[in-house]
Length: 172
Image 1: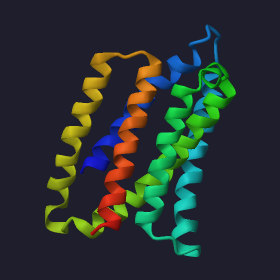
Image 2 (image 1 turned 180 degrees about the vertical axis):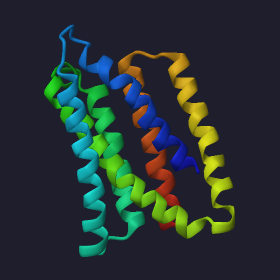
Image 3 (image 1 turned 30 degrees about the vertical axis):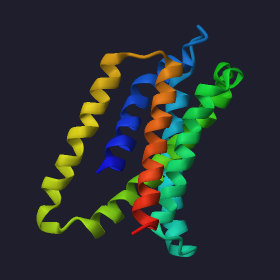
């Protein structure tokens, strides 16, 4: 539940703040092309899940752990490397890498949730996961932090998710 809330709230806050990041230098970015690149990255991530788990037999929990660590790195790269933040191409590739992880995240998390949550309680439990997720999105959006603080916060959300999944999957 913690991982679902943190990752999916990061995704929704990202949706609200990606455009201001590209407009931060005062230029008019090609938002249609950017959106297309991000959606292609999501599709590539989804396809990678199938290849990684079917062809290379990577465990879903291991793949999810790697993805969450990489997703957090993407936001920390934009937040902490000031020269990077001003280079829109590097920002775009960082955001595409994050969207790639989201594309693989959904099949991973649904596979894990399907194994853990009994089918009779699935709808209730999944809806309960949405309560903290929506609360986190609302808190961050009402807080309205600077972009630097926003990316740092989302990186921290994903770092906590990475640690929680690693602990859950490898220390049980």
